[in-house]
Image (cartoon, rainbow, N blue to C red):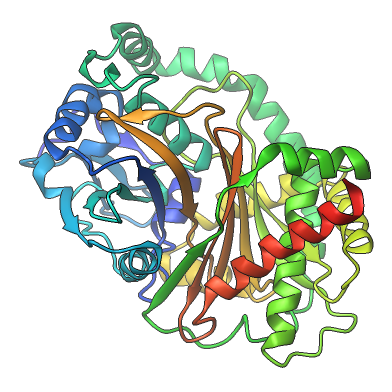
Length: 442
């Protein structure tokens, strides 16, 4: 197995590579609902034509010989696209599709192959779907959205086009620069990182001293089984009207609705939520506006307090806004980036111990990713709906994701079936919480 052209993983990528655990596979699972059964031959043709844009889709991880040396991406021996694309026929509806995705979410990827897979699903009452799984070490949410855009088209016939050489050439020039040239380019960033490190150490120390989150049915011993659910698409314009009418942001509104949904779910499970606040671990995008890379991880983690015990929709929204504004004005994103980078220097066993220590201070992972603003096509099929499910950090067993696509927003939930066996109830409560906010503000 050759190592020519091997690329070293960043410390953040190493963190998420080694976050893999039997009860939490660090894989991003996504769903694209199509207007018909996927044409697998067309799909393979698209991937063969454009996979060169994404070298890591043909690479595997080579672990280092010494603990101080980071792993490297190297070319996979005998790469075969057919090993990553699977045909599935369900002939069923949303509940059966959710059960299928939940089963997938509980399974690891094969680390002897490139860390991704794609399931082409036909049936679904005349429609179809694509269920993709990409290991988080390949890239963060924004990188994966850009990867998606390069594999989709604006029209049904766009799949026939060849990839533009310009993008590939730019990538080749960037990768081909000398180490001195890269160092010069990165000096301003290194200075900012050093200043952030100094200023963020106190904040990181404060976060380290946070008490563990309060016990609720959202936390507990994990199993090997997962369950998923997602809302029907919610008009983004409705969310914007709520935000405008309340002087908040779209993100504030959605996070508030999720807090309301979690509170309703917990009360239904018999939990007394009076005065209850729980924390979510929230990824924060740190990419520069001009960063168009389609691989790697550049995000921080912050702790967000969610007022799940507040029943009044308006009060809950205002409390979320105050908390979100506090985080934006704080050093917590920088401190979280220090933590993510630092975990990548630790041996795997110690990384798990430290990760679990910080994860105990939260009850769930909450992720918001902005997707394409217009409908797209893949291999000739229109993508009607999209959503995804983020992996959970440490010993957490619940994840909630927000994804916007073509003027609509979908909220997804993934859970350990030992803790939350009915995540569809949770997403239904989130949808009701948005309706409650709309009644008060629109």
